[in-house]
Length: 150
Image 1 (cartoon, one colour):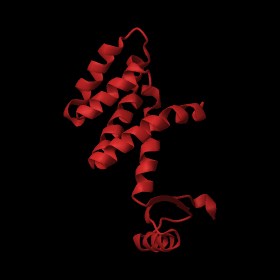
Image 2: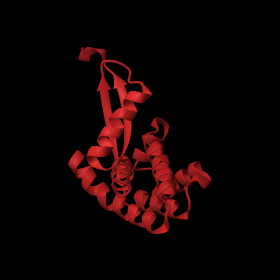
Image 3: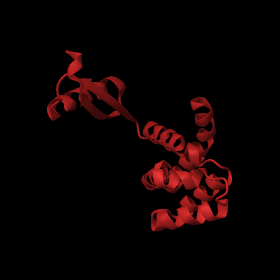
């Protein structure tokens, strides 16, 4: 199923990325997509979204009302399209694919480091600098401590 949802999500992500790039609104679209992902992941809304008896028009109106001014006109149009095509469940995959396209266009590489101890900022910087020299991209590091590594 994961392959199916990513296949469904990719064209939406590519279309949004293309539009966001053309209009210079990559950050705005990142925020709007994150908002939509939060909505579809919200347990209190999940039941309504999954209910086939709750009409698509009512669902669209409800979600647009919840989002308010956080969605611009194009964001509302995307939401309408996703509801109409019953694609709300793939919003998290759309967000992930969009973020990947955005990171690639901005030459960003996200790295997750697991260490037996908490990394100090200087250590994270050293790792980021080494990876930047190796890959020629901006590095964003997230790290976690796992004492089981020792």
